[in-house]
Image (tube, rainbow, N blue to C red; front, top):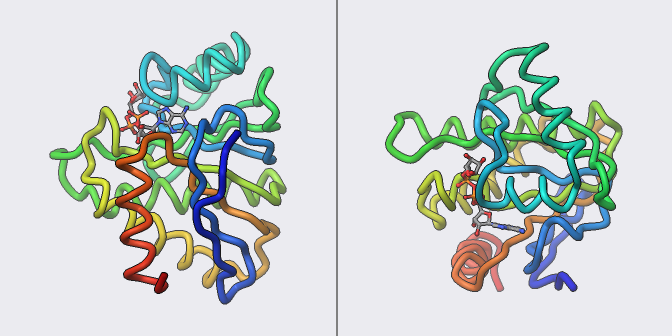
Length: 188
Ligand code: AR6
């Protein structure tokens, strides 16, 4: 079972939570995948989502690439959730650490995911620590950017229908770092 570690209500009224657990079991309208630009879900959380969600996810991803081409940071793709509880998977592409302009690219991936969630009329969305695994983005820096991007999105989109954003972290090290950044930003 996934457990809520900390939560707060944003000034724009959404509930923001840090959750520890497995994003593939989240019961939300949409989960975000930490994808690559070709939507080849061969490793990390992408592999876990694709495996649990069944063949539909890779198949719909391949269809997306055929139709739209490679996925950019700012414009995530989306597919159905297949066999998952979530109705949709939003495939966000974070930066590879070392590629340049990483902070902006990560912020774009988070903002883009929230924009797609709104477009799909999702009230609840769960996202992983995009780019902080195989792509090597430092976790503390990613936490700052992810929190800020979420807050900024809702400040700039006051008519958003999203009510709940869950940042779902798998490992203890990520939870420790994200909670530390959370406490220094919001107080413990
Ligand atoms: N639930 C939640 N978080 C998870 C799970 C899970 N089931 N499994 C892993 N994580 P990564 P990236 C965490 O590497 O850095 C893939 O091959 C993990 O501990 O999945 O954006 C894609 O296809 C880490 O903290 O994503 C791309 O090629 C976080 O999810 C590439 O990896 C992100 O780690 C993307 O790399």
